[in-house]
Amino acid sequence: MALKEQVASDLTAAMKARDSVRTGTLRLLRAAFTTYEVARTDPKNSRHGEPITEGDLLSIVEKELKQRLESIEAFRKGNREDLAVKEQAEIDVLRPYLPTQLTRDEIFAHVEGLVREHGKEFKAVMPVAARELRGRADGRLVNEVVKQLTQ
Image 1 (cartoon, rainbow, N blue to C red):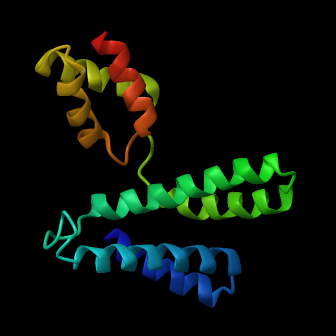
Image 2 (cartoon, helix red, strand yellow):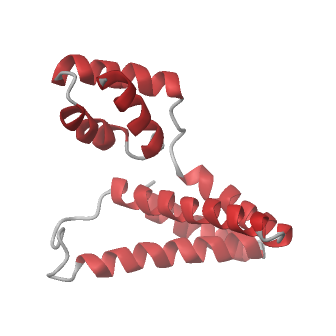
């Protein structure tokens, strides 16, 4: 089942179960999908007219997840543990929609193959690594590994 349909199905189930945290989180995710789709219809958008892929939707889920992680950090600095707990509950709802994240060793092995194929030039390897590992690995971690292997 495609990600968008899975979210819609899970939202319906959460509403029937009266799970307010899950319902609210999935509604926000669905709204983010819609906002992205509407933005793609704007002729000024650099990707205007291109079809929306599962990768695009996964990047939206990642973005939503990162926003909540940043919020947790800010709430903890402000001694608002109650809000941090709420954000963590939303993260727990969003995380299953992402594919399992690769470990540093798996990223290292993948990037080693790219370095052999494209050479030790950072600017040649990083875009390929970012594109191939999008959704499966944290971008900062990929950047660190590429830097390490291209030095």
